[in-house]
Image 1 (tube, rainbow, N blue to C red):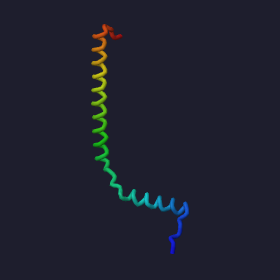
Image 2: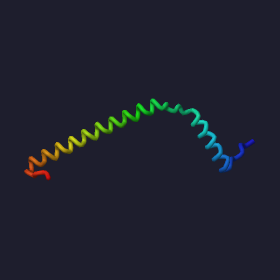
Image 3: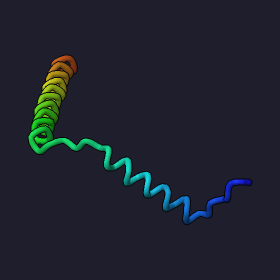
Image 4: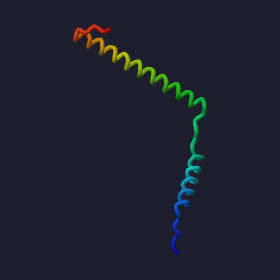
Length: 72
């Protein structure tokens, strides 16, 4: 006997049931893990920003010396 074809609503319901099943398998981080990761990201962003700022200012200074332009 051939398998009965599912209509669109049955497919949508199956999809959401599977989504709920997958959501139950997720291991969510604790508040302390989230805070620690946030602080690490914040420090890295600040350090990289400072490095880019320093590089920008240094190159601007060198370019000014080469071209003889006085910064305002």
